[in-house]
Length: 342
View (cartoon, rainbow, N blue to C red):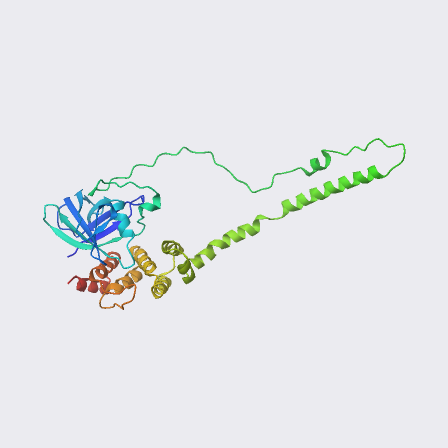
């Protein structure tokens, strides 16, 4: 029976790093090696993220037993993670694991799980292994302690100004009365007082006006509008593939809505979008999406399209098995999984 291989995010997540987990392996835990082959051209992954028609073996001195006891795991870096994440819309990857002494060997399909990030997501990320020698996962180093900073409190309130002081600080003192009577000084005084009163009244009215209310309303309405546009065909056509997928996933449409979006992606030949949405939700445990994805490769249900042109028994079996990990009593998934293994 084929091995079950998954590429899972670390906890905490680290861009360019992941756990390679292997289940149903019947061999030993030490001195293992694996090769990865992509389906569209039969090329094998090489060191430094290259591809060639010659098999290349990534050596692992030792796999660790998973905490659940269900299989083995080893940590891999950007040389493995990045090429698997950068695969094209129709890319599928087969992995062969064997003992270095040419002993036990087995094959399976490997797929990146939810949350695995490329090294470019975190800037410069150094590989955790030298050459093609991989290391088993170790406990993450504790995060450096950040000194507690005093809380910075920001306020949008206007500064309190005493209107009385504005009106009385520079009281006008009329000049000595000239020998000849004149009303110019009195008129000037009245003008100054009226101007000060107008300025004070304007300030009082501004302070009483809820100027922040429209801003708050607009801010509150923004997320709803953003979510509404996150998974539209217009956004799909205008945004970069990865950006659209991330925003659509964040909007969390239900399964039926997501299938509509995937069908729109297929019709519009956005094959990468369809693949990523399928894989993300299926890996997250959505049985409806996982079942639909399995049928894209199942020869029994395949409706050939540009995005899914041919059947692939191994990939279909992988997604049926994913359903069974969440729902072991799913009769259809179990039947199709067993038939595809024959």
